[in-house]
Length: 212
Image (cartoon, rainbow, N blue to C red; front, side):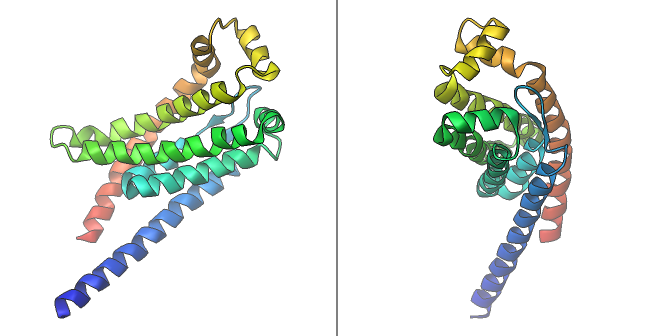
């Protein structure tokens, strides 16, 4: 009986601690979204650094934590469509459902998949030490891949996106994605890779030590 009670107490403490850590990561995402670091606006896509806390959350809190962090990221992105994000406002006016999928659903999947990737790689002995770096790079890459795939699916044939296609001289959707993302995608991926990998590795070790 004492063993059962001890197990329940331990599980309760773990759940409480997990919820506190998750709440802190979501709070970081929400605060960042309200500062210039969250969304750096450009005429086309906004440069976002919110993939960093999403990646960190997915790594230290697992796939479910990553999903929730990704959802928080997506909801802040959808909110930007209502408060003056140039591209988001236009897309919302064209297709609200498509805009929701593009901004929210894709980011939710991004966080969840990043968590799965880290969990899978971290369980492989020879790859374990690299799992932080790979997952931290996968997060912004997934963000770009999923977001742009949804953008092309819902909006490629609209006059708004076709104006970008013409301006960039893109002959097909794939070339459009590459040209449209351009240097911005590299900046996001580079920053997330460096910052998220260092922060997540340090936090993961600290949290694991604290559990012991």
